Image (tube, rainbow, N blue to C red; front, side, top):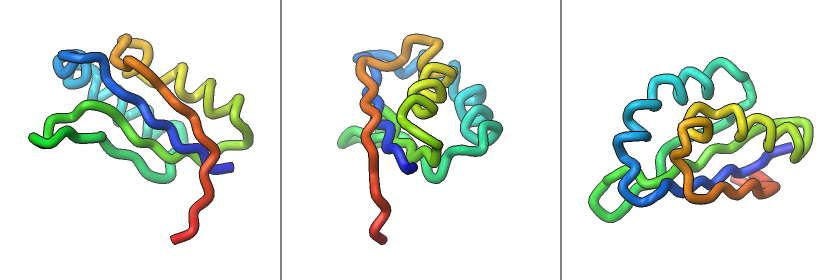
Length: 89
């Protein structure tokens, strides 16, 4: 099952993002369920969130993955949405 994780950073949290970026990227690679991932940018190319496509068994697995993300543990996100997604192209 593909799940789109869309997370928006808390305002002014770029330092939290940068301090935890290496651990976050390691988590993306280690868990083996990330199909695609990258930061959401504002108009000035500043990172303000994340878009991650997870390939997991169910929504509960996506929730558990999201809870284990170092960014989430660091309190970076203002909001996180987990949305079932279907790849067309």
